Image 1 (spheres, rainbow, N blue to C red):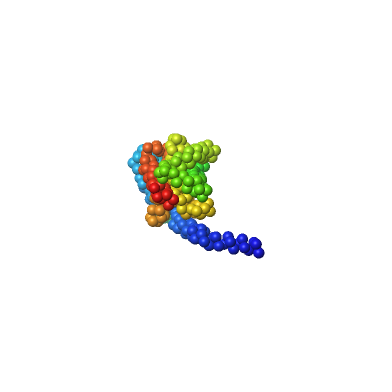
Image 2 (image 1 turned 90 degrees about the horizontal axis):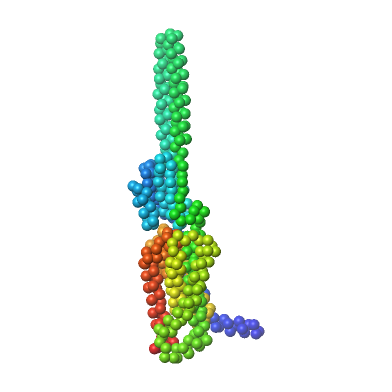
Length: 406
């Protein structure tokens, strides 16, 4: 009976907590719907290929492949510029009978798609050339057979041994010519087998999709743990009465917010540096750009997560409620940060990503790590993160009005 009594008491407390009940049932449904939208609308990857001195036939064959766009360039320099500006994913240049392929390789799925498209296009072109050569050879053989038949008719009409001898000689010459034509056709086909050389701007042929995910995952773990620790810590301050006693003093609300942000910010700085260094050195991630720039971007993201965690902690009455914000706040960061390609998604799905802080840090860090972009060229992403930080900090100051009006 005592067990039943305890069970009844716990259930009554749960039913009184409407927010907890709502998060328990609505959060999983929202996450599942979000996953359904993302994975059902993102089934293909579009690739852009730049070609230099490539035959029109090969360009047409590759362009006819679904989700492959071919752009021609007059020089390799122009193609490299387009590759650096992310307008194309790979360059195909023909040198004589050989081909040189250069991949951005920031996304292994696009690299594999380009390789497959080039292989299929080259095969189709070779088959077309073989058909053309075979057609010419067949036409030549028909002509030779016609000439041979004409000479044989002349032999029958003349009934002369000299003519028979000449016809026999002509037949031998025709057979030799036929064999020579066949040999030349086979030889020309074997000589057209090209040599293909692959080059990679980032990584090598063994670079997988995890290399694309790693810069974003690094930011995600920075965001997640700073968000969780800061939110839990301030919630504890409030539930134990420490924040109430602090609010009873003449200290301004803005000073309280800045004080908490600076104190937890120091821990966030140390945590961010540790996560970045471990990701780069322990996991062996190749960094093309400046390592300090990677740390700076992740530090800015950590401050955004810090302000976000403090803000949501003001709406939670217990650690359990704080944990329930994770499916609503943290999980969408993963889906819309760029780990799952957004290229082929619906426009309204892409629009959701613009309110996700991790998207901007992920784009900036990926550019620095994989393309060697300077941090000064990432001003747009950094300004958006700063805007998030300012807005969340202001909301934190306003949010403390719930506990003190001045």
